[in-house]
Length: 204
Image (cartoon, rainbow, N blue to C red; front, side, top):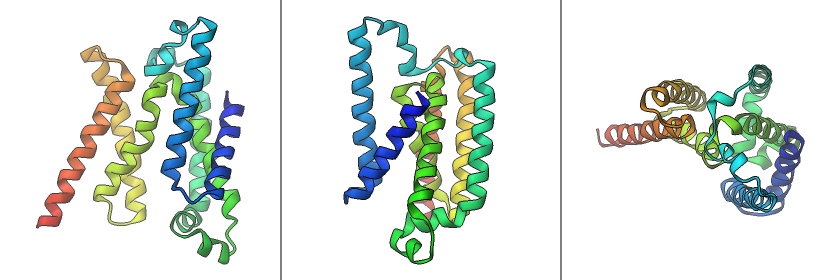
């Protein structure tokens, strides 16, 4: 599954670089097609109910091995972020300028996409296919509402993700709600709170 995810991520990057569409559009198209194909294949095999937990996630399915995988990929992400922070920002703002500065844009972009693909594939059994995309978008969108610079934008994104994850697990236990949806609900609440906060600051 991880090999497939890496290939899928590289293909997505290839299509993105060959078209004028934004990354959000390409990701939405690819994720929609992938989910539809996956559900169609499961339906044909007759084992759809067996894999229904993949749709909304199951936090109780986490194994010790998967926790180790998450820890290792977290370290890899932190190392990559530490050494390529400025280059990533430059690539995201202006690819042409990044190339003129000697930045290997395709290499950095591909590594970034591969890391995201691995994180998604490891987390998908816990969070669910239908909700994993929300967790990629909501913390970053919330951070964008209140961040004053790129470093605070990254910091808020991480803090919002951690808070949503931890509080979502706790709330799901007490309210008897699946963990994935609970985490996304909290992430959504944070988004609207930051949106209201931003509007208040703008008016003042």
